[in-house]
Amino acid sequence: MSLLKRRLLVLLFLLGLFCFLNLIYSYYEDKVIINFFRPVLSVKNQDTAFGKDDLHLSQHLSRVRREFKMTLDQYETSGGEFGNSINAFGVNTSFYHSELYGEMFKLYGKKTNTACRNALFLLIQVHSSPENFMSRKAIRLSWGNMKNFIGKGQQSISSLRSWKTVFLIGQSSDPRLNDLVLQEANIYKDIMIGSFKDTYRNLNMKMIFSLKWPLEQKCRVSYILKTDEDCYVNIWNLLHWLRSYHEAKGSRPLYAGRVQTEMPVVRDTKSRYYVSEEDHPADIYKPYASGGGYVISASLLPALVNVSRTSPIFANEDALLGSLMYRIGIQWTDNQKFLPLIFCSHLNKYRFRDMHMSGLSRQIILHGIRGRLQLEMHFNSALYNHFPSLCSSHMNYEDMRDVCE
Image 1 (cartoon, rainbow, N blue to C red):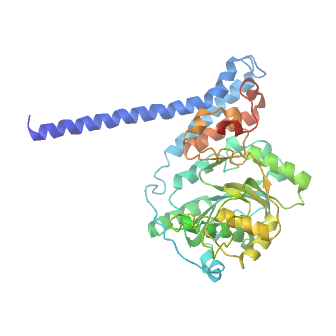
Image 2 (spheres, helix red, strand yellow):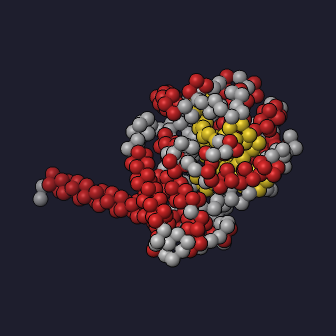
Image 3 (tube, rainbow, N blue to C red):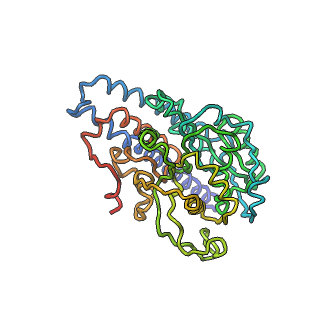
């Protein structure tokens, strides 16, 4: 057999292998969707409060399935909308306080953002990287948009449940990517763009940015949720909990989330978490809420911005906020339903697919969820929210602590 024929056979074999693996992957992804809906769909054949004779539940499930398929199709066909394949290469830059309150925080998105047009009960700020167009798209199609069919319902009735989602993004070193982000901002009107380099070591600058721009834009907001683009926010649970707090303790400033205490400062200069003794002399951080999701009272913004002008701006942005809160005398509130699995180090990236929705749907924020998994989680959480009796026939636990054990 000639060398050319052998190479051709090898090429055909590799092509066939690729097609086979792609087929398996597609089957697995479809199976994930089916498995995520199975806890809900199986209830139709059980003798529960919403059993097989309940026409309303059956019709609602059919409607949601159609809506989910349409939303998923919309998400998957938008992959090339803004050139998703472009990669950003950030550059770490040093800075001083004068830069923090000067051009470093120029709001490129001023004319492209409508977040503060109306008074809001809750402003959700999602910290995002320039290149992650599809992560932002998934959030817009799921929990991040109040206008979505699946997001309508109780929260749209009361002014105490009015909310808006915006994305906070810095600058990429790739000007093409910056242009694409600006195009995205012009289309969706939900992006605030800072002039700092969007890198890991500059997340502290993004955090200060998140405190500063609502003041500059004169936003009329009661509470602010900070979260990340790889987190799922159960908007129903969040608004229910926040409304209860507001009605009972609304005059008391709030700083709540999954609080970490006695966290050591990393002194290894090779670590991305490195903080010098000059920036943080103590070896232990003040208690702080994990950055995947925390809520603060918007009334704290002026004091936080003011105290940050005279505080060391060290690289751990979550600990930095905890330090600022300590300096203005604000006590933290720990809530186990914020990021319940972040300390489960033994769980892999597929951990949510092995757990029952009746437990996951009771949480407020879950970390490690991107893309279509955002859509799957949101549609299932919506069903459990609208039909609480679905949980009666399944494992019914309030928190996830037993999962970590």
